[in-house]
Length: 506
Ligand SMILES: Nc1ncnc2c1ncn2[C@@H]1O[C@H](COP(=O)(O)OP(=O)(O)OP(=O)(O)O)[C@@H](O)[C@H]1O
Ligand SMILES: [Mg+2]
Image (tube, rainbow, N blue to C red):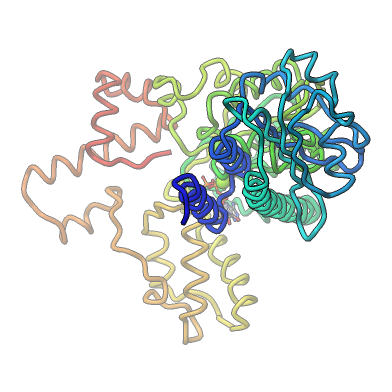
């Protein structure tokens, strides 16, 4: 017959198994949960999970639960020391019900934290028979002794913990290899060809030329797909840093904890899957430029750290207290209304001012249709290479349609549209049907849409309002405060209208 406590142990094991199998990525909380369950189910006061640092020949406390947990975490244990060291050397479990008189016991830690151990169980965490660490349970409650049954359960928990850790470590190591290869690809030959024919773009590139020669931060603004990343590349390539790395990072792509270690690096043991020291993007960018894409999505605690890098050029790797100084130029980009984020206190005012020393606004494609023929030809030649098909060009109707379309997704949308047309196209020229352009909703081409749309006065007023607000916003480069002034309305009312009318803007 299974006792109540055995049933609880089984259930807990099943839960843990499910989490491990679901590829749960936060190894630290998973392993903490495993240790906490073992501590509770074996009815003891405290517990620790030590991981083996093979290079240093020592064990460090990855997790320590119980009243002195935080204090214990400062210590490391040499392999030739203590009960944990013994367990690793012999790759064997042990029950000790008279710790004080056991010669292996490391008195020094117990004394320093003033926590006498009476009874203890320690088991190795094994992966393919290789010991990667130790779990210790300390002081069975009610002055009881640990028994063989406790030890057998703990061995099962320790196996689960080892599995969770190894899974997380292999994910971390694969992620880091992929990142490294991607960085290499991007820094070696990853720069894009920039096409800029329209007077607006020619003027922007002249500004870029001047901006490039300074070391100030630049905030690149503009709708999605307008080419902000390409402008960041151009600033770097035209600067004195051009032979040094250009490191990109998308602030929206990773959860806060991972992003922090990605930006600033970490030291071994900073968190459960930190198997080695790792340099962050700021260190990789030394001497060059870092491009922080989607900066509007950066979490507030990281904004504070970034501000410090800008002001003092220093930061610390996660888990380390040693400050690192870097010489890196910072470029940032967002398609969000960053002033609105500042007003909503989602983006730090001081950081905004620091980044915005040189703002660079990239206009949407619909305001520079002169670029369309050349961009289209460029994407067509790429599409032909990819599809191994030949096209003579675009039919006049296809070109007219592209020139008239509003391109809400900007150049990225144009690129995708032509790529698709190359796959679909069956004649010598790309036809208008191959482009699959949606009926344009751009109020700048109202004569066309109004014929198709509703003709009542209310709809006409709404259409005009949308068009007019959008136009004035664009003239003020998306700055809502300035636009509200120009329209002679309150800024809050403008925000409300933008929401109501679903105005998508730079
Ligand atoms: N001037 C240009 N010449 C050639 N290709 C361009 C140009 N501008 C943008 N592109 C292409 O359009 C796509 C989108 O560009 P990019 O990623 O720089 O846009 P973005 O403004 O950063 O967009 P998002 O805000 O969505 O990140 C890329 O594939 C890029 O190669
Ligand atoms: Mg981008």
